[in-house]
Length: 290
Ligand SMILES: [Zn+2]
Image (cartoon, rainbow, N blue to C red; front, side):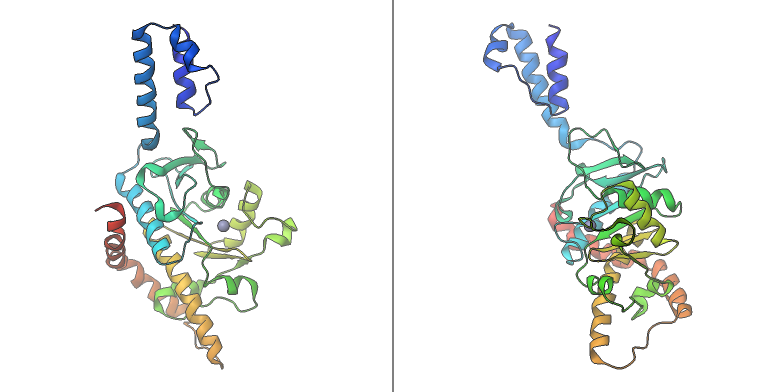
């Protein structure tokens, strides 16, 4: 009988059971066999719905909506991620298990500490680049959401000398600046991924107090006081970059928004954000069966 808890524990943590079923089942009575089988079913049923304690379902839904809508717009592809700081524990954050953003559901959201360790992992795989999120949350107490993309529109601005600047009012937040982080500067030749805390800390330092940081030969990170704002900024960073490339290609000087215009327009954008957010929720609703 003492074997039962060990076997169930092994199933819950996804570890292989080395004992051959035909031999150990044969040695147990029918009651124990039933309990074991019921235990298997229970463990399997619980696996995809690990709850994140103390978190409003609306916040989880925002992460799911943001992930799916950015994938829908092509800002995210099979990679990239949307996270939120834990609302009651500022030293933790919420992020999907390793999964393409277009496939993220509420059951995939996990909790992490600021060292990038998963809380209640349950055997699920996690993103290599979770340290982007952990180190920005550590460095920026004001940030409640982080989005990382490999936005195609932005890539040219990460490798050229042309700074990303605000083309129009929707991307007004860019008027405060969009610094470029070059991983090679301090870390030499890498695989370009933010795969440890020291890389994440360096990225967060380059971000500084800005809303956006570009990553040379990689993509960008946007931050905000909510998931909605960080996702909004990720989307319009990509749109602005595409428009700016077009304006530069036309030739001549480009007449960008000034910092003053940017600050004023950004205030308006933040006030009317729900209008576009509700449109985006409706856009991805069919993919969630709603
Ligand atoms: Zn990346």
